[in-house]
Figure 1 (cartoon, rainbow, N blue to C red):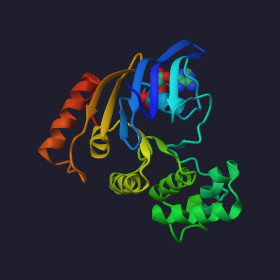
Figure 2: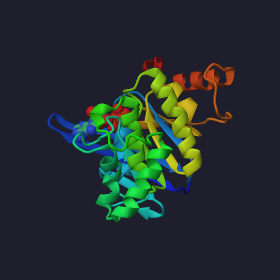
Figure 3: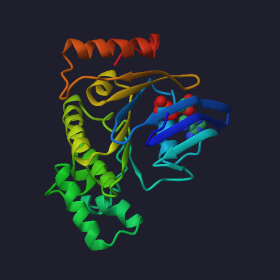
Length: 253
Ligand code: ADP
């Protein structure tokens, strides 16, 4: 199998104070360019670890990760990561936060400003450039995190439970907006979640992880037209098959 993002026989062992933790074993993933893939599993089954390895922030203990045709040896220009806690700098305005990744990559200031304005518009934040993170709602802060990640024009957006801390209504809005951004920017998205409904709503394909050690237990394509209706029978059927794949502990949302 070949893909834009490829994980080949990935294993990860953390050396903790109480001994070694095998976080992942024998992970093989291939993701096509433009695909929206959710990594679904209970807490502790290695989803974040895999995402951080694909972001080049954490080395695998064994195996190979290839992004855009190159084996990773650190963060790739082709990817950008969005965290659950959005990772904004509280002392910087929205504009400065959104420009930060570009500044780190040496983009000139006029270009930075122009791209920031474009991404703030795309994420519904036009008019908030001068605000500070504490002046924004949780959903708006997460939009700033997404805008910032998009400014470097990544070919893949890596998202680690980005909506996990939001209330249900805000989460629903941001899911719909993310799908619009994905369609307009044609980025690949790898999205970590422990919510079955979120995965079925968003993904082209869902990779199901099971714990101790983290392994891939199922690869589920979601062949439903968008926008998807969580109350439809077809949606419920896929959700039920995922619940079964997650095992006896995975039944709840
Ligand atoms: P998930 O994202 O599915 O919740 P994680 O990737 O965060 O899972 O964690 C997988 C396993 O690796 C867990 O047992 C966790 O405790 C362990 N782990 C994660 N990060 C570290 C670390 N930096 N040091 C030691 N163990 C870790």
